[in-house]
Image (cartoon, rainbow, N blue to C red):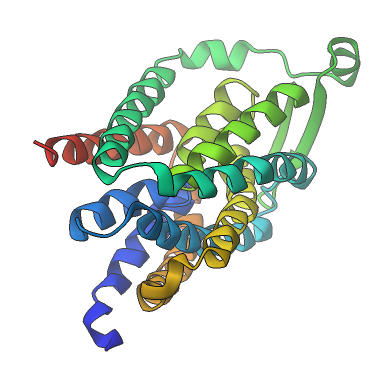
Length: 281
């Protein structure tokens, strides 16, 4: 009976809201919860459920951010295409990772990501303000791509990035996120802000768009492999929760500073990473 899974609905609401707020897709919260709740389920089922939920979360979040005009579609399409081969390979590789090793790898990766994110917020604010905005001539001379985006609130975002680096990062994110079932935003957002110079709010919004394509790719691979035989009802209930929660997360992003978003992500990663590692001992 599906009623026994109704408690997953509020979990989906939380995952959707927080995942959209930080642009991570929510998988980094959902996967450790599912690992702790279902210790005897196969790794591929846990990651399959999570990826499907991440897709619905990212799709709902993308629509919300689209209304705010924060999605850089040109960059998003380029990064999305790059994630596809990695996502396919990651989904196919999950079945070869033993459950205990998966839990430990996931926990360690989350703690490393948390440390990196927290340290990234230490950059002095005055240094950020002193940066010269990229000009088209600079982008052409260095081989970087310049972007200028004006959101619905009238805020102008000017930035430039190395497209080759962005594509390489996206391939890697596609593989890791699909392998672990986490969506990859916890890697992609800091990479976009720190290595590709994206403003935080543009990075979180564009990351949601990229995650939707990546998660759909990984989910389709799992469907073809018959992973969802025992996880359809749980997936649908969680998906309903994240679709609603994503709208709240996008709205909340208007009232939360970029630094707070990154630190919130770091704290969440560290806590669930420690919990996963300790659960193995």
